[in-house]
Image 1: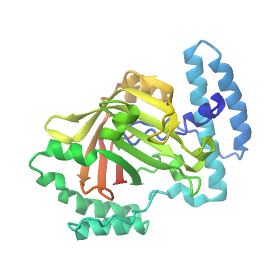
Image 2 (image 1 turned 45 degrees about the vertical axis):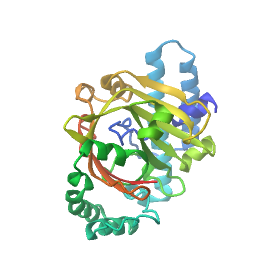
Image 3 (image 1 turned 180 degrees about the horizontal axis):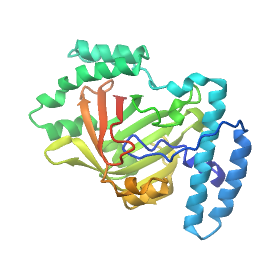
Image 4 (image 1 turned 45 degrees about the horizontal axis):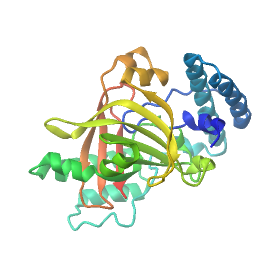
Length: 313
């Protein structure tokens, strides 16, 4: 993988699912060729990477990321305007009804996802399902939450319109988004960490197994094990899908929330905000096909309130 291709994908990564906010994207009414913009800015980034001034390199990397992500998204919007409203990014798998304990509320949410229903319908289904979370009835909530989260989860739906430029793309350009907890996260990014990955779609140009990884420390909140505190160091890496023997290449590592948010062009207010907290509003432990509803409840003001639905693989 060349340095150019790595830089070209850096700021296209979806930073938000664990409370990592992607850089702001400039908007323009002018049509332009995305590949020409990419070439010009990648040349600038290459020149900056040879400069020992880290601030200059980060500044140009941010500029490149903001422009290329806008270019790709804008280019596709011209040919397919409907992508700007995409929210359901994957539909439930065939084994979604694996549990005999399925409820009408659960079935209603699955049906809403399968139908790619409106946000209003899906949010209503979530509101009815959340009070029924199996975690509420567990006698050992910490053990249940740990066991339930362990594994690989695929993103089905999110509620915030500017959550990620890449997830607004139409199929087959849109990549799949995954989260990793427990044993699989430990193998891939280290003990005590959680990770998010993007695979496929426009990222397939990097190779059939290519995956963009973003990871952080995570600690369950004492007395409230369904809520994870997100801690540094934050790492953005380019690698391959889980199980690969190839080493991941670290592109960015930050030792504090403020440092990571600064790299991502966040405001002073955001840089000074507390750590992000990520609550599991509803989580099942039925194995493959289990559902999970989560929400960012504290931290960066831009992303607090984001809600996600994932399904375990």
